[in-house]
Image 1 (cartoon, protein in one colour):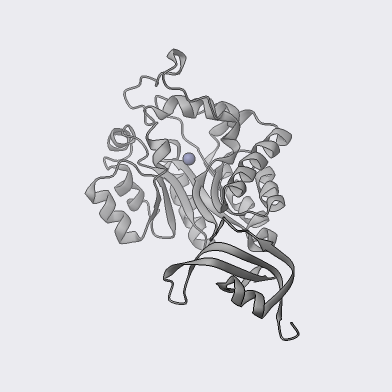
Image 2: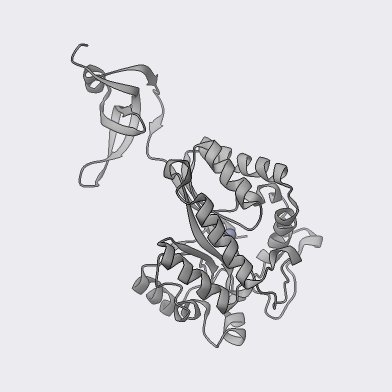
Length: 312
Ligand SMILES: [Zn+2]
């Protein structure tokens, strides 16, 4: 024991999913992980690590998997209380009719979710965020990306308290010209949305030992003017941070863009605005043609499809 290296925690007897120095994944039965501070010091067979390391805390996790945390690339924690309000079969919750309803079947869900979104007091928002984050941590998600229109400081605080790693962005909107209007509170002057996004970055980016990263966030093409789009794209590039947007989420978004936003599909329009010149995360993007996909590939756009949401 005298020659043993001191670790803070040793996890033993797990089925370890790891990767080697070349980044190749491998599975280790009866595996162990030695942790020093907040870093993994060693991965190996339980017997070997117990011979090499000593720690006050040894966790026997026999029967369990030890693996890197899951990453969820799109969450609205502040809509957690809206769960269960999206039963599309209910006669009162039919999709809204509208020639250019950009959200299609998602309209009903979104309107219900926004009612919750816009009505939370800070103390309720804190509970909402804590619940969502606790559920993620409980199911193995250790990093996630959040877009949040209100109570942004409450959310940042909840992230800090929880221990989770997060990317968050103010979900900005400055436009209401569609068949499905956003609630009044969600549509803000362009400049105030930009300033609030910058304030959020200034206050919280890198907080909690770097666990929280702040991006710029555009709600969607039908909710964001070209001026807001370019303003936040410029801000993201100047700050060296990312930009996210719900884009080509539903079929209705395509005729909307063709008829109301310069005659292009949503993806070429976003490209023309320069949104893909920096790091960009396209949210949903369930309705792409081969030209859209080529554009994404050319710019290295990240896409989070959220297939379960798309199937609703
Ligand atoms: Zn979303």
